[in-house]
Amino acid sequence: MSRRLLVTAALAVIAPSYLRAQASTARDYIVAGDYAKADGVLTEALASAVYVMDSVNALVWRGVLEYQRGNRSLAQLSFRRAFKLHVPSDVTGLETISPGVARLFDSEYRAVRIFPPREVDVPARWRVPPVFVYPAVLKPRRISGYALVHIVVDTLGNVEQKSIEILDTPDSAFVGPLRETLLASRFEPAQSKGRPVKSSLSYQFNLTPPPLQDPVRLVDRAREQLRRHRADSALALLADALDSANHASPAIRVYAQLVQGMAWRAKGRDSLATATFSAALAGYHELTDHGVDLAPVLRSLADTVRLLTARRE
Image (cartoon, rainbow, N blue to C red):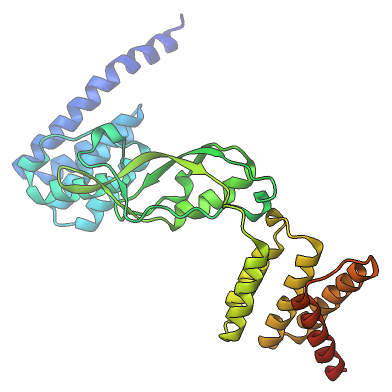
């Protein structure tokens, strides 16, 4: 082994203990109020740091020094620089130097450290149970199953967007809606020693398709909403009636489209109303041409629509 390699290896062994001694010396100078000497020691320690933890220690004690000098903002900056490199498990002895600096360190520490469930006194919990909207694209296939997600909940009870991991799901179409559900959720944050902390959390969703609905009943309800001048509610019911998952027959689809055209007309969306009426009447004539005996209510609606469209023409 060359002399240069031997020297490098020796320094790698000596450096950690030497830098730990520098941090201890800086602490002693801070306690004694000799801030100039503490500054010099920490400047040297940071410049000669070999390992990440050496830099972290130097930056933490730099933060303590700045706080004792009366520079709270510089203390915060130093703590944050340290935590960007690594979040230490703890730094002892700050309370004996200054309760204020201990509180500041603790505040910054809790804002960045992610506590695993085993290290919190009170785990994060839902303020309101999550409301998952089953994806419309999966309704015809009626896929069900479980999804496992992993998230980080911050000290305000919000889910950190970058933390969301969809670990398992029965279909990729669930991923987007699951992310939206999680981002819209609010939690009571986890607590450690009586204070809120950022924490990790795993949760399992039971993904169940909505029950099948009677499309005739949906259209009937939509007509009732129209009578009450609630066109938006009517359109939502009609969209469900026309959803392929509910297996509406061709005659029921015509029924739904006739009412849908009326709902668009009530909203002043004449072009949409005209297009919907045209599709409905085309379907109506196709059924009658094939000799399908349609219900009286459907024939009456078709006559009404023909009159409405004739007047507009």
